[in-house]
Image (tube, rainbow, N blue to C red):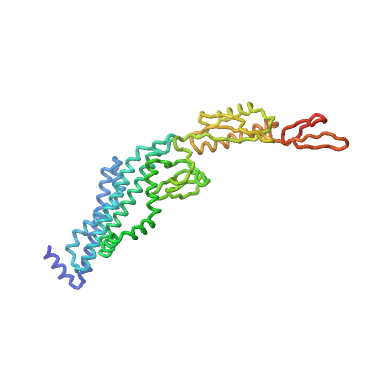
Length: 382
Protein backbone atom coordinates (compact mmCIF):
# COMPACT_ATOMS: atom_id res chain seq x y z
CA UNK A 1 0.00 0.00 0.00
CA UNK A 2 2.86 2.37 0.86
CA UNK A 3 4.50 1.62 -2.48
CA UNK A 4 1.29 2.37 -4.32
CA UNK A 5 0.86 5.65 -2.45
CA UNK A 6 4.50 6.54 -3.22
CA UNK A 7 3.97 5.91 -6.93
CA UNK A 8 0.79 8.01 -6.86
CA UNK A 9 2.60 10.88 -5.13
CA UNK A 10 5.44 10.63 -7.70
CA UNK A 11 2.98 10.75 -10.60
CA UNK A 12 1.09 13.76 -9.27
CA UNK A 13 3.86 15.38 -7.30
CA UNK A 14 2.90 18.85 -8.51
CA UNK A 15 -0.39 18.72 -6.52
CA UNK A 16 -0.19 19.77 -2.83
CA UNK A 17 -0.48 16.86 -0.44
CA UNK A 18 -3.38 18.34 1.53
CA UNK A 19 -5.48 18.56 -1.64
CA UNK A 20 -4.79 14.89 -2.33
CA UNK A 21 -5.78 13.99 1.22
CA UNK A 22 -9.03 15.95 1.06
CA UNK A 23 -9.78 14.42 -2.35
CA UNK A 24 -9.33 10.93 -0.88
CA UNK A 25 -11.67 11.78 2.00
CA UNK A 26 -14.30 13.22 -0.37
CA UNK A 27 -14.03 10.17 -2.60
CA UNK A 28 -14.49 7.89 0.40
CA UNK A 29 -17.58 9.83 1.46
CA UNK A 30 -19.05 9.65 -2.06
CA UNK A 31 -18.40 5.92 -2.20
CA UNK A 32 -20.08 5.44 1.18
CA UNK A 33 -23.16 7.34 -0.02
CA UNK A 34 -23.38 5.18 -3.15
CA UNK A 35 -23.06 2.00 -1.09
CA UNK A 36 -25.75 3.19 1.30
CA UNK A 37 -28.15 4.03 -1.52
CA UNK A 38 -27.66 0.66 -3.22
CA UNK A 39 -27.91 -1.33 0.03
CA UNK A 40 -31.03 0.46 1.28
CA UNK A 41 -32.83 -0.05 -2.04
CA UNK A 42 -31.88 -3.71 -2.10
CA UNK A 43 -33.04 -4.34 1.48
CA UNK A 44 -36.24 -2.39 0.90
CA UNK A 45 -37.00 -4.41 -2.23
CA UNK A 46 -36.26 -7.78 -0.61
CA UNK A 47 -37.69 -7.31 2.90
CA UNK A 48 -39.45 -3.97 3.20
CA UNK A 49 -42.48 -4.73 1.07
CA UNK A 50 -43.86 -7.44 3.35
CA UNK A 51 -42.44 -6.45 6.72
CA UNK A 52 -43.61 -3.08 8.11
CA UNK A 53 -41.01 -3.23 10.89
CA UNK A 54 -38.17 -3.34 8.35
CA UNK A 55 -39.75 -0.52 6.38
CA UNK A 56 -40.10 1.59 9.54
CA UNK A 57 -36.48 0.85 10.48
CA UNK A 58 -35.20 1.89 7.05
CA UNK A 59 -37.24 5.10 7.04
CA UNK A 60 -36.19 6.21 10.51
CA UNK A 61 -32.51 5.23 10.27
CA UNK A 62 -31.73 6.46 6.76
CA UNK A 63 -29.89 9.56 7.97
CA UNK A 64 -27.92 7.98 10.84
CA UNK A 65 -26.84 4.96 8.79
CA UNK A 66 -25.73 7.23 5.95
CA UNK A 67 -23.64 9.26 8.40
CA UNK A 68 -22.24 6.08 9.97
CA UNK A 69 -21.06 4.76 6.61
CA UNK A 70 -19.46 8.11 5.79
CA UNK A 71 -17.63 8.16 9.11
CA UNK A 72 -16.47 4.57 8.62
CA UNK A 73 -15.11 5.49 5.20
CA UNK A 74 -13.33 8.56 6.60
CA UNK A 75 -11.87 6.47 9.45
CA UNK A 76 -10.46 4.05 6.87
CA UNK A 77 -8.98 6.71 4.58
CA UNK A 78 -7.79 9.28 7.14
CA UNK A 79 -4.64 7.35 8.25
CA UNK A 80 -3.62 6.91 4.58
CA UNK A 81 -4.21 10.51 3.50
CA UNK A 82 -1.02 12.61 3.05
CA UNK A 83 -1.92 15.38 5.51
CA UNK A 84 0.21 17.49 7.81
CA UNK A 85 -0.13 17.07 11.55
CA UNK A 86 -2.18 20.24 12.09
CA UNK A 87 -4.81 19.38 9.49
CA UNK A 88 -4.89 15.75 10.60
CA UNK A 89 -5.51 16.85 14.20
CA UNK A 90 -8.33 19.17 13.17
CA UNK A 91 -9.96 16.48 11.05
CA UNK A 92 -9.63 13.96 13.89
CA UNK A 93 -11.32 16.42 16.26
CA UNK A 94 -14.13 16.97 13.76
CA UNK A 95 -14.42 13.21 13.36
CA UNK A 96 -14.82 12.78 17.14
CA UNK A 97 -17.58 15.44 17.23
CA UNK A 98 -19.32 13.70 14.33
CA UNK A 99 -19.22 10.37 16.19
CA UNK A 100 -20.80 12.00 19.25
CA UNK A 101 -23.52 13.52 17.03
CA UNK A 102 -24.09 10.12 15.41
CA UNK A 103 -24.56 8.43 18.78
CA UNK A 104 -27.05 11.10 19.86
CA UNK A 105 -28.88 10.88 16.53
CA UNK A 106 -29.11 7.10 16.74
CA UNK A 107 -30.39 7.34 20.31
CA UNK A 108 -33.14 9.78 19.30
CA UNK A 109 -34.12 7.59 16.34
CA UNK A 110 -34.24 4.51 18.56
CA UNK A 111 -36.57 6.26 21.01
CA UNK A 112 -38.72 7.47 18.11
CA UNK A 113 -39.00 3.98 16.60
CA UNK A 114 -39.92 2.39 19.92
CA UNK A 115 -42.57 5.06 20.53
CA UNK A 116 -44.03 4.70 17.04
CA UNK A 117 -44.07 0.92 17.27
CA UNK A 118 -45.79 1.05 20.66
CA UNK A 119 -48.44 3.56 19.53
CA UNK A 120 -49.39 1.56 16.43
CA UNK A 121 -51.72 -0.56 18.58
CA UNK A 122 -53.86 2.46 19.54
CA UNK A 123 -56.33 4.40 17.40
CA UNK A 124 -57.46 7.99 17.89
CA UNK A 125 -60.04 8.02 15.10
CA UNK A 126 -62.75 6.25 17.12
CA UNK A 127 -65.35 7.66 19.51
CA UNK A 128 -64.24 5.85 22.67
CA UNK A 129 -60.51 6.55 22.49
CA UNK A 130 -59.85 7.31 26.16
CA UNK A 131 -57.16 4.61 26.54
CA UNK A 132 -55.51 5.56 23.25
CA UNK A 133 -55.31 9.26 24.18
CA UNK A 134 -53.87 8.32 27.57
CA UNK A 135 -51.02 6.27 26.10
CA UNK A 136 -50.36 8.71 23.24
CA UNK A 137 -50.02 11.58 25.71
CA UNK A 138 -47.67 9.69 27.99
CA UNK A 139 -45.47 8.39 25.17
CA UNK A 140 -45.22 11.76 23.41
CA UNK A 141 -44.36 13.71 26.55
CA UNK A 142 -41.76 11.20 27.73
CA UNK A 143 -40.31 11.03 24.22
CA UNK A 144 -39.89 14.81 24.09
CA UNK A 145 -38.25 14.86 27.51
CA UNK A 146 -35.86 12.03 26.61
CA UNK A 147 -34.99 13.70 23.28
CA UNK A 148 -34.20 16.94 25.11
CA UNK A 149 -31.95 15.15 27.58
CA UNK A 150 -30.14 13.28 24.78
CA UNK A 151 -29.50 16.53 22.90
CA UNK A 152 -28.23 18.27 26.05
CA UNK A 153 -25.87 15.37 26.84
CA UNK A 154 -24.59 15.19 23.23
CA UNK A 155 -23.97 18.93 23.01
CA UNK A 156 -22.26 18.95 26.42
CA UNK A 157 -20.04 16.03 25.44
CA UNK A 158 -19.12 17.66 22.14
CA UNK A 159 -18.25 20.94 23.84
CA UNK A 160 -16.09 19.14 26.38
CA UNK A 161 -13.83 18.00 23.55
CA UNK A 162 -12.55 21.58 23.29
CA UNK A 163 -9.81 22.40 25.79
CA UNK A 164 -11.10 25.91 26.48
CA UNK A 165 -14.60 24.68 27.29
CA UNK A 166 -13.23 21.87 29.47
CA UNK A 167 -11.15 24.31 31.48
CA UNK A 168 -14.12 26.62 31.85
CA UNK A 169 -16.21 23.72 33.09
CA UNK A 170 -13.60 22.81 35.71
CA UNK A 171 -13.40 26.41 36.91
CA UNK A 172 -17.20 26.65 36.96
CA UNK A 173 -17.44 23.59 39.19
CA UNK A 174 -14.73 25.07 41.42
CA UNK A 175 -16.78 28.25 41.91
CA UNK A 176 -20.24 26.75 41.70
CA UNK A 177 -21.76 29.02 44.35
CA UNK A 178 -22.87 32.20 42.58
CA UNK A 179 -22.64 30.63 39.11
CA UNK A 180 -25.00 27.85 40.14
CA UNK A 181 -27.57 30.38 41.35
CA UNK A 182 -27.34 32.38 38.13
CA UNK A 183 -27.65 29.30 35.92
CA UNK A 184 -30.53 27.99 38.03
CA UNK A 185 -32.44 31.27 37.72
CA UNK A 186 -31.78 31.46 33.97
CA UNK A 187 -32.89 27.87 33.40
CA UNK A 188 -35.93 28.05 35.69
CA UNK A 189 -38.56 28.40 32.89
CA UNK A 190 -37.08 25.50 30.93
CA UNK A 191 -36.71 23.25 33.96
CA UNK A 192 -40.17 24.08 35.30
CA UNK A 193 -41.78 23.23 31.97
CA UNK A 194 -39.79 19.99 31.67
CA UNK A 195 -40.84 18.95 35.17
CA UNK A 196 -44.42 19.99 34.39
CA UNK A 197 -44.28 17.78 31.29
CA UNK A 198 -43.31 14.78 33.40
CA UNK A 199 -46.12 15.59 35.86
CA UNK A 200 -48.64 15.85 33.02
CA UNK A 201 -47.48 12.53 31.56
CA UNK A 202 -47.97 10.82 34.93
CA UNK A 203 -51.11 12.50 36.31
CA UNK A 204 -52.62 13.44 32.89
CA UNK A 205 -54.79 16.47 33.59
CA UNK A 206 -54.81 16.84 29.80
CA UNK A 207 -54.36 14.38 26.94
CA UNK A 208 -54.05 14.58 23.19
CA UNK A 209 -57.41 15.61 21.61
CA UNK A 210 -58.94 16.62 24.95
CA UNK A 211 -61.56 19.38 24.63
CA UNK A 212 -60.55 22.20 26.97
CA UNK A 213 -61.55 25.76 27.83
CA UNK A 214 -58.52 27.92 28.63
CA UNK A 215 -58.35 31.72 28.84
CA UNK A 216 -62.03 31.80 27.78
CA UNK A 217 -61.16 30.00 24.55
CA UNK A 218 -62.51 26.57 23.58
CA UNK A 219 -60.49 24.05 21.59
CA UNK A 220 -58.68 20.72 21.49
CA UNK A 221 -55.22 19.71 22.70
CA UNK A 222 -53.38 19.24 19.41
CA UNK A 223 -49.82 18.66 20.59
CA UNK A 224 -47.89 18.42 23.85
CA UNK A 225 -44.28 19.43 23.31
CA UNK A 226 -41.42 19.37 25.80
CA UNK A 227 -42.11 22.92 27.07
CA UNK A 228 -45.49 23.99 25.66
CA UNK A 229 -48.93 22.78 24.59
CA UNK A 230 -50.63 23.66 21.30
CA UNK A 231 -54.41 24.19 21.57
CA UNK A 232 -56.37 23.98 18.30
CA UNK A 233 -59.20 26.48 18.77
CA UNK A 234 -62.66 26.03 17.29
CA UNK A 235 -61.99 28.63 14.56
CA UNK A 236 -58.70 26.93 13.51
CA UNK A 237 -56.44 29.31 15.38
CA UNK A 238 -53.64 27.89 17.50
CA UNK A 239 -53.00 28.89 21.11
CA UNK A 240 -49.56 28.05 22.50
CA UNK A 241 -49.52 27.65 26.30
CA UNK A 242 -46.56 26.76 28.58
CA UNK A 243 -46.76 23.34 30.18
CA UNK A 244 -46.50 24.86 33.65
CA UNK A 245 -49.84 26.63 33.07
CA UNK A 246 -51.73 23.35 33.38
CA UNK A 247 -50.06 22.59 36.71
CA UNK A 248 -50.35 26.03 38.30
CA UNK A 249 -53.67 27.45 37.04
CA UNK A 250 -57.25 26.14 36.71
CA UNK A 251 -58.82 25.24 33.37
CA UNK A 252 -61.77 23.21 32.08
CA UNK A 253 -61.33 19.74 30.57
CA UNK A 254 -64.54 18.54 28.93
CA UNK A 255 -63.24 15.06 28.08
CA UNK A 256 -61.22 14.17 31.18
CA UNK A 257 -62.95 10.82 31.85
CA UNK A 258 -65.26 10.32 28.86
CA UNK A 259 -66.11 11.84 25.49
CA UNK A 260 -69.86 12.19 26.11
CA UNK A 261 -71.12 15.61 27.16
CA UNK A 262 -74.43 17.17 28.23
CA UNK A 263 -75.37 20.37 26.46
CA UNK A 264 -77.70 22.99 27.96
CA UNK A 265 -80.13 25.21 26.02
CA UNK A 266 -81.63 28.19 27.87
CA UNK A 267 -84.99 29.62 26.80
CA UNK A 268 -87.01 32.57 28.15
CA UNK A 269 -90.76 32.18 27.63
CA UNK A 270 -93.92 33.84 28.89
CA UNK A 271 -95.73 32.74 32.04
CA UNK A 272 -98.55 31.47 29.83
CA UNK A 273 -96.26 28.89 28.15
CA UNK A 274 -97.35 25.24 28.22
CA UNK A 275 -94.16 23.72 29.66
CA UNK A 276 -95.22 20.04 29.33
CA UNK A 277 -95.96 20.59 25.65
CA UNK A 278 -92.54 22.17 25.10
CA UNK A 279 -90.99 19.20 26.95
CA UNK A 280 -92.70 16.76 24.58
CA UNK A 281 -91.45 18.75 21.59
CA UNK A 282 -87.92 18.64 23.02
CA UNK A 283 -88.06 14.85 23.34
CA UNK A 284 -89.36 14.50 19.79
CA UNK A 285 -86.65 16.80 18.39
CA UNK A 286 -83.94 14.88 20.25
CA UNK A 287 -85.18 11.52 18.95
CA UNK A 288 -85.18 12.86 15.38
CA UNK A 289 -81.61 14.18 15.64
CA UNK A 290 -78.66 12.04 14.53
CA UNK A 291 -76.43 13.84 17.04
CA UNK A 292 -78.30 12.72 20.16
CA UNK A 293 -76.74 9.68 21.87
CA UNK A 294 -79.98 8.58 23.55
CA UNK A 295 -78.76 9.13 27.12
CA UNK A 296 -80.10 12.44 28.45
CA UNK A 297 -83.03 14.65 27.43
CA UNK A 298 -84.84 16.84 29.95
CA UNK A 299 -86.60 20.19 30.35
CA UNK A 300 -86.96 22.09 33.62
CA UNK A 301 -88.08 25.50 34.83
CA UNK A 302 -84.92 26.75 36.50
CA UNK A 303 -85.67 30.42 37.18
CA UNK A 304 -88.40 33.06 37.20
CA UNK A 305 -88.02 36.68 36.16
CA UNK A 306 -90.45 39.65 36.28
CA UNK A 307 -91.32 39.24 32.60
CA UNK A 308 -90.48 35.61 31.77
CA UNK A 309 -89.74 32.18 33.11
CA UNK A 310 -86.41 30.51 32.26
CA UNK A 311 -86.36 26.97 30.83
CA UNK A 312 -83.28 24.77 30.65
CA UNK A 313 -83.22 21.93 28.12
CA UNK A 314 -80.58 19.24 28.56
CA UNK A 315 -79.44 16.91 25.76
CA UNK A 316 -76.39 14.66 25.56
CA UNK A 317 -74.03 13.86 22.67
CA UNK A 318 -71.07 11.59 22.02
CA UNK A 319 -68.40 14.31 22.04
CA UNK A 320 -67.88 18.05 22.39
CA UNK A 321 -68.34 19.07 18.70
CA UNK A 322 -71.54 17.03 18.41
CA UNK A 323 -72.80 18.48 21.71
CA UNK A 324 -72.35 22.00 20.35
CA UNK A 325 -74.09 21.18 17.06
CA UNK A 326 -76.91 19.40 18.90
CA UNK A 327 -77.49 22.41 21.16
CA UNK A 328 -77.75 24.71 18.15
CA UNK A 329 -80.11 22.29 16.36
CA UNK A 330 -82.43 21.82 19.36
CA UNK A 331 -82.49 25.55 20.10
CA UNK A 332 -83.51 26.31 16.51
CA UNK A 333 -86.26 23.68 16.52
CA UNK A 334 -87.72 24.81 19.85
CA UNK A 335 -87.76 28.45 18.78
CA UNK A 336 -89.51 27.51 15.54
CA UNK A 337 -92.05 25.41 17.47
CA UNK A 338 -92.85 28.21 19.94
CA UNK A 339 -93.14 30.77 17.15
CA UNK A 340 -95.43 28.66 14.93
CA UNK A 341 -97.37 26.45 17.39
CA UNK A 342 -97.34 28.38 20.67
CA UNK A 343 -97.12 32.13 20.02
CA UNK A 344 -98.65 32.86 23.42
CA UNK A 345 -95.40 31.59 24.97
CA UNK A 346 -93.33 34.36 23.40
CA UNK A 347 -92.10 36.96 25.93
CA UNK A 348 -94.34 40.01 26.17
CA UNK A 349 -94.94 43.16 28.22
CA UNK A 350 -98.29 43.66 30.00
CA UNK A 351 -100.00 46.85 31.06
CA UNK A 352 -103.19 47.54 33.07
CA UNK A 353 -105.30 50.53 32.14
CA UNK A 354 -108.14 51.62 34.45
CA UNK A 355 -110.32 54.75 34.22
CA UNK A 356 -110.01 57.21 37.11
CA UNK A 357 -112.39 60.06 36.48
CA UNK A 358 -111.55 61.66 33.18
CA UNK A 359 -107.93 60.46 33.19
CA UNK A 360 -106.42 57.06 32.48
CA UNK A 361 -104.19 55.57 35.18
CA UNK A 362 -101.43 53.36 33.80
CA UNK A 363 -99.24 50.93 35.69
CA UNK A 364 -96.67 48.55 34.26
CA UNK A 365 -96.91 45.16 35.86
CA UNK A 366 -93.72 43.54 34.57
CA UNK A 367 -95.40 40.64 32.79
CA UNK A 368 -97.88 39.47 35.48
CA UNK A 369 -101.35 41.10 35.44
CA UNK A 370 -103.00 42.10 38.71
CA UNK A 371 -106.19 43.98 39.59
CA UNK A 372 -106.11 47.40 41.18
CA UNK A 373 -108.42 48.14 44.09
CA UNK A 374 -111.53 50.00 43.03
CA UNK A 375 -110.90 49.51 39.34
CA UNK A 376 -112.32 47.36 36.64
CA UNK A 377 -110.92 43.97 35.60
CA UNK A 378 -107.37 43.75 34.29
CA UNK A 379 -106.84 43.76 30.55
CA UNK A 380 -103.67 42.29 29.05
CA UNK A 381 -102.32 43.01 25.61
CA UNK A 382 -99.02 43.00 23.77
